[in-house]
Amino acid sequence: MNQDARVSDRSCAKERRRRAFLAILPLLAVAGCSGLVPGSGPPPKLYRLTPKSTFEPDLPTVEWQLVLAPPEAQGAIDTTRIALAPSATRIEYYADAGWTDRMPLMLQALMLESFENSGHIIAVGRRAIGLRSDYELRTDVREFQAEYYQHPGQSPNCNGQAFCVDVAINAKLIYTPRRTIVATRDFRAFAPSDVDSLVTAVEAFDEALGDVLKDMVAWTLREGAQDWAAR
Image (tube, rainbow, N blue to C red; front, side):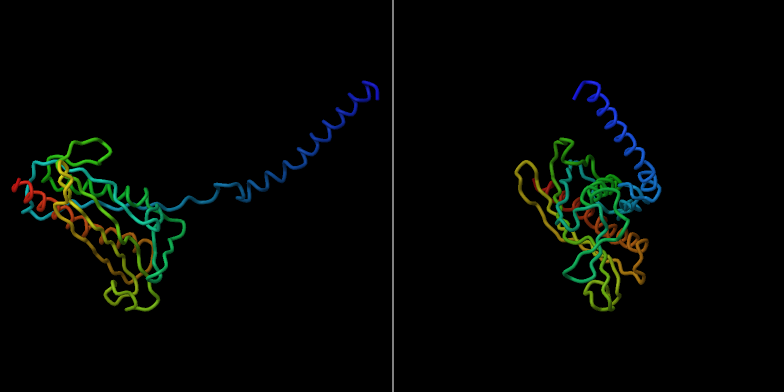
C-alpha cells in the first residue's frame, strides 16, 4: 500500500469516529434532561438539634477546666442518617433526610454549647483543641433512635404509645492529672408522640436529648465541684 492510500485510510477512520461521536450527543442530552446524571435529584432534608440554655439556679460555679472527648457510638447510629427502629432487633433510616453532621460530632457540639450556656464553668472545650484540663467527660451513646412499633404497648419505652424517641448516654467524669474516674452515670430520656412523621421525630429527638443534656451538665458540675473541694 502506497503512502497516499494510508493517508486516505486514516482520514476515513477519523471521519467515522467523528460521525459516531456526533450520533451519540442527542442521547447524552436526553439522559441529562431525564435526571440520569449521577448526583442529580432533590437534595436530602437536613436537620439539627438545639443545645440547652436553661438550668437550675442552684448549680455550683466551678473554676476548673473541662474537655469533652468525642462521644463513642455503635456503627448503626454513628452516622448522619436519622435512625428508626421498627423492632428491638432492627434499624432502618428515614429516607431523604439526615443530621447536619455525624451524630457523635453533632452531640459533642451540643454538649459544648450547653455547658457554656450554663454560665457556671470557667472553661470547656473539645479535646482536639489542646486545652489543659482538670477534668475530662467521656460519653458513650447507647441509644439514639426513634422507635415505631406496629402496635401500642410493644415498646417498653413509649409509655403505651406506638412511637417515641429513645436517647441513652453513659457518661464518665475523669480527673485528668491522675486519669481516675471520679463518677459515672447513665442518662436516658424518652419523648413519646402520637404521630410517626419525620418532623415529629426530630422534635422528639430535640426534647429527649434536651432532657439528657440538662441532667448531664448539672451532674458533671456537681460531681466535679464535690471532687475538686476534696482535693
